[in-house]
Length: 165
Image 1: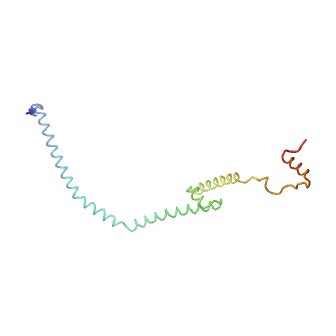
Image 2: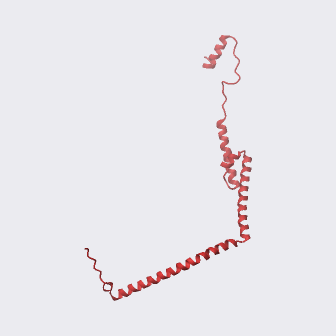
């Protein structure tokens, strides 16, 4: 059989002062645990009362509070509508399509939206100039050709190789 460990008495290792301190700590811990239990019980008793208070507070919300919230919502909608109207007005002034206005004109004040519109128009103008078709010399009216074969051949040679010496 395994031998049981030898336990020295606590009083001898701590001495008289240490034993008093240990007992005082144990008593204090027991008292603290008792107070915690009492406070937790009180907290559990107060939870339903707190919930009822919250419900009453919500129910008693004044008509003024509801009207204030509604006013704030309407003001936000009005501001959004004004900004959108300004965006489309500026887009129309600069000849920008509705689709491009929604994508590219994202400012919130007239100055920034105007700058965006002017820049977009400038970029579109550069693109149009770059895409313009160059004339095709093989198309359109051609100079009249001489009637005899020798003159026609000579005109073709000059057109192909340039004027001779």
